Image (cartoon, rainbow, N blue to C red):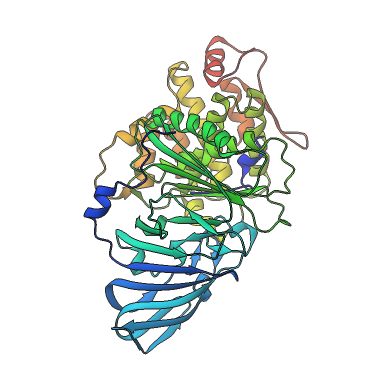
Length: 479
């Protein structure tokens, strides 16, 4: 899912047989629509589609993750039947209607790089690099098809990479096209590995002082942690696409998104990052967990507080476990998140904040979600003498039978709130609008928080009792 360098966690400091698409299954699945994408050097793509299901109405996504007006990028739209153009008209942004069922479409999409905050979430192109996301390039009716074929025509010297297998003509069989990402560039460093039974591919574009081998090693360790945490084997191999932010005047060090089984990470070459390998490792503790949460969960509704906020907390613990950070940095990160939380008014529940996530710049979903995850983890460890933690709840969540698309908030709260104390936390902060006051809550668990200065400081208390010592030791604290 979505996680950018503006979110609070940034404050932390050959596989023998690797197959990204089972060829036998691909042959058994007859793709519906056939899509041809011609990539130009002027930030434009020309698209032709032989549609699997003829229709008269064609809708393109108009907004995603705060990026607006995407439908206005569709130009020169034409509908065809039996090779002849039939009359069609634009009825709204990204909405077209043809006078008769069209069996083919052709149009152009202008995709120059836009706002820095949008670059990991929507398609863009420069003269030598870019990202193509089918979700904002194809009509929704085509995206809803289970499998389509996609061919790409590229300028001389330009290549393309993705998590899909292809033939010599850059033709791909794409399942779940609404989640498909293609990376365009002139130079790729590609490596693959088996990570605890899960196929892993790392694609590094452009020139960096590190290689894909370094990223592959770090990512494989993180995937092993999350496989053990959830006990769920991913349905598809994972792909990590790493490229360069096209806007070098941006203040952002990086931007990222996980979509389907693909992680896209864009780095700013001008960012003052001394240790990119360590930084990327920390970023991937968050992004790779999205392969499981929410991408492998059959849940509906707005539960962003869990798959963003709680994932931030799990990622923080994973970074500590993998020694990407130490316990002091673990505490400092939580203190900085709390300072961010204190900087704005919070008058909404986490469920309400999730529903309004893209209509506000206030990071309640991230900050409050992470802090509630921290409180629940402390409570569960305290109740069990350090034997049980928030992490154990993920095994419960993934062990449930996947039936109808259940409401994510109902299912997750039921899994989390299993004692009077955890139910109070859920009632107060997830369902309720109570504001978090860590100064009052943390001493019982062996922490003290000094929030009187310009920056809060979280530390272990000096007068720890035996239960508190066990709790903090279970977190990774040692003295």
